[in-house]
Image 1 (cartoon, rainbow, N blue to C red):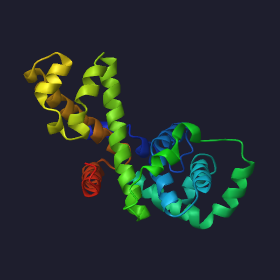
Image 2 (cartoon, one colour):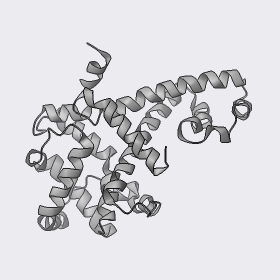
Image 3 (cartoon, helix red, strand yellow):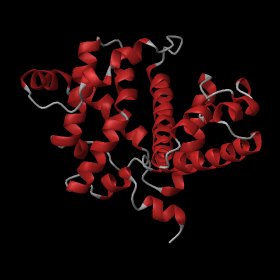
Image 4 (cartoon, helix red, strand yellow):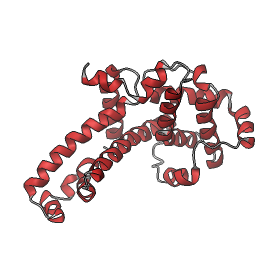
Length: 244
């Protein structure tokens, strides 16, 4: 089995799609993990459509509950290859046809999928550049950033497990910012090591980050043949928004 095929066999969205209506426990867990990771792009999209913070929270919450608990997934098209594309189509369908009924259900519901106090959605939303007025563009930008954040979080956990947290925090600028703003010599001094050692660590860090990023993208597509196209698309979105 190829590396891509092995990776594809355990990706979240492929598990959901393979289960059809996500009725299996494995598919339910996979879908829940995806939703918990990628809720913010949808929340930002709903807010940019003009909904109030309170309504956007209700809508996002109920939409995910429909996916997870009420069979909404079966009424959409899970064959869409990208989880990003599937979610936006399903959300727009939900907003058009389900809002009034779902709103009434939410008022009487006791189950909460997301903890809004912990998520702090409005704190994040207030930081959004309002030059991005198009809701779809904002959705794609936040989706791309979420994929990057997921990859960085995974890579940081790997460094923590290796007792190298300080090293990661010092060098992550080479992945997320302008590395020239912090010369290698300065990074070496900060870490009490040599510039050559820093360069080698940065090389390995970038290589591993690329691998982890690819794996995160793989979680959101249903066909391994789509991984490279999706990765190129997300990086192009970030470059166009000035966040890459």
